[in-house]
Length: 145
Image (cartoon, rainbow, N blue to C red; front, side):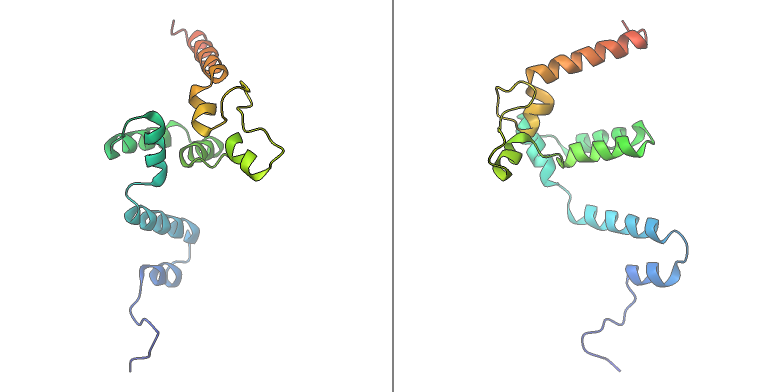
């Protein structure tokens, strides 16, 4: 007998919920991740990063970047920061200024340029000085010079 509004075929989620007793959260996470990736080949964040860089980045290059960053460390906090940076979950000052009118939209490092996400991480003169200092510190620490 067919009932209206009820799907009688077992879905992947039914199999996960009804047949799994252990590692349920992991299986759900893998399913949701695969489902999201099937649906969304080119993420809007990829388009925004390509616009900021001034050239398009093909999917193979994105895959290399993604895989390399995934393999760098097992530290959850570091991976969380990578995801926040990739998906632009940090709110830059230009956006915060739109939400809170009393806040300045200028970069908090140099106080000159408009505080966009790309400027704060890549273009800001003070940020570039910081990256040069930390890079030279690592080279000295690992005797790379």
